[in-house]
Amino acid sequence: MERNKRRKIFTIVPDSSKKRIQLKYVALIISTQIICILVLVIGYNSILHLVLQSAQLGRYAEMQLSKVFFWMNWLFAGVTIISIIIGGILSLHLSHKFVGPLYRIENTIKSALKDGKLVEFKIREDDELHELIILLNELMKKGIKYG
Image (tube, rainbow, N blue to C red):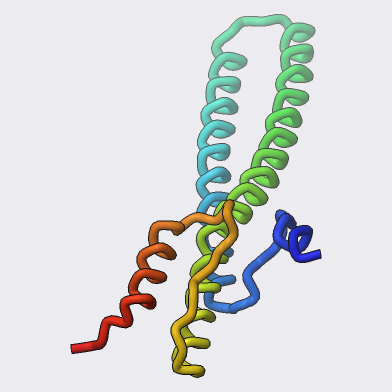
């Protein structure tokens, strides 16, 4: 049961401050994608209108090209929506690998302060920040005093 719980892609860390970090990261990724896509669409449509205005095509050719460009715009829209969804899911998953360990570190430190006992920091194998966990565990074992 615990293993399945960890594998969920949409899991958000329960702490509200950590959730804000995750959502800020996801918003940054999605907004960057949207800006890039908007620049591409504006550039594409500008070039399209320049070509159609400068080319001396007959009415039939202009109508056919307009249909082609109409469907290309819908294709761009579909690709845009799909890339934003995939980017959002992947960024949420990636941020969870950083925010999850921070959440566990914070809870472990709170528990150690509350109980006054040495504790061992543990995170999942696929999480990031393993070097920090190793250093924190060494610090706990040595019991270095302040000052």
